[in-house]
Amino acid sequence: MENNRAGRPKSCRRVKEMPKVRCFKPQGIPGIKLEEMVLSVDEMESLRLADLEGLYQSEAARRMDVSRQTFGRIIDSAHRKVADAIIHGKSIVIEGGVVMKREEQVHNAKPGCVCQHCGHEESHRSGLPCRDMICPECGHHMIRKGGCGTGQEDI
Image 1 (spheres, one colour):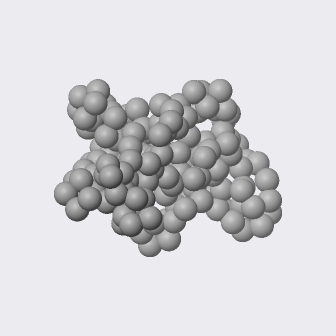
Image 2 (cartoon, rainbow, N blue to C red):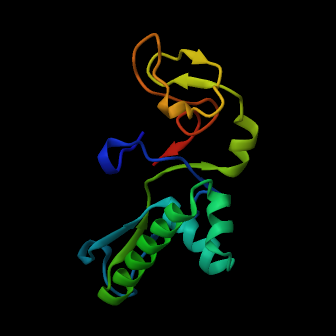
Image 3 (cartoon, rainbow, N blue to C red):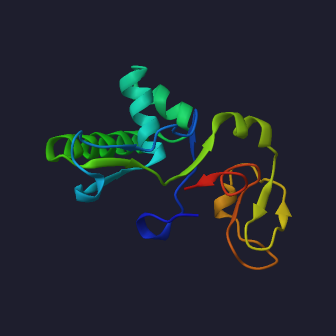
């Protein structure tokens, strides 16, 4: 899994669909001459939910399976990147992020925790997130079975 602040794994973000178009650029300028601005798939999803669908941040966060505060950081980053690309004539490349399509979440949802390193499975303990559990077999952190890390796109 991808890491962010202080080595904490980035949580899985749910998206409606993967992008059909992965690059936008200013007209009339060869792509090789343009600086790229990378917009992650979860940032694109935040733009879709907040700006295209007009959802409040709390509802958009629920749909992406993140906190409202995390959604706020994602959408702020997306807005800054898009504004920078438009104002400074950069291409926008959509890639990256730890995401899972929402349908996969429903179909793959299974109770329990699993170690990504050795595959050991444990029952989920109420009140203890899987990511805080340590695998008794190999000592690595565990993840929620059926969540990101098992079937997600880390692109």
